[in-house]
Amino acid sequence: MYIKMKQLKGIIRDMNMSHEEVARALFQGNKYPTLALSRVEKGLGSLTIPQLVELSNLSGLTLDQIVQPSKADWSAKLERGSITLEQGGFIVKINYSSGNCSIYSMEKQEGEMFKIDPELPLTEFINQINIRKWKLN
Image (cartoon, rainbow, N blue to C red):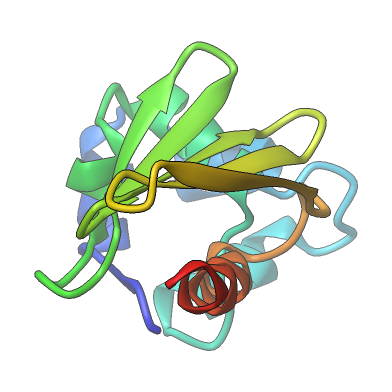
């Protein structure tokens, strides 16, 4: 699954912050944060869950306003300390600090707990939960 970022340059422009300031905030510890952000803007890289949370905090936008999921994709909502993803009767909660996750099937009334690396790009995490969703079916 691919999550298409809305016009990231436009979001950054509307934030009243420079491109470099946003890059440093999102890519802390990266030797070349501006280059890393440019790669994401060009579709050559992907933001991690903590980076999406930071972008949401910096911009004041919700995750659904930042990412553009198609109708078949997961909807995302930022809650205190976690992200909730929903799709067709499945709910996934991610603690973006610890990496603790749960996936729950409302149809079968059962779920599973698992752990991820919080620095995993969101697209890779979505691939993992789609596999777990398939196993719960």
